[in-house]
Image (cartoon, rainbow, N blue to C red; front, side):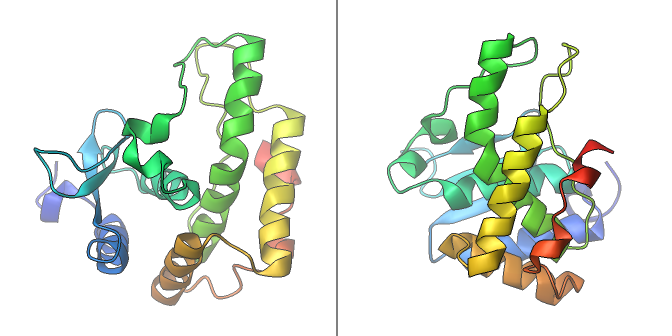
Length: 188
């Protein structure tokens, strides 16, 4: 780790500050990095606040974890990792399809956050040990979800607040323009 605060680059420190400024008090949730693996931990007897932990100091990991948190309903936010099934690398084709179904909304919202923060987005199949990348159907569904949210301006409430704050800080002014979310670059 470097000598920077928390070992994070300045942009990642700003992202953490934005999230915690918006949600530490209002939603009793804090974002932090440095995790070996990303995880969401609801408040319990050891910690009076919910913890959203992203991997190492990766800006993209933070955006992805925040996206999951923003689409999770109240009951899901009371469960470790929102109660989702997760199978690590090496998933079968059927398991990969299940994974992709759960990831459409979070990855679409992550893409919107990335545009708002002027940060590169890369769709993730999260199955590196197999030869399966993101399916064409998955990439199309992620793009369609981003278009839908932008077209009607109906981002999840917490997501809308976070995207607006990212845009104000990082200058991604037109992040709600559906034209910013073409499916073709998802394959590059």
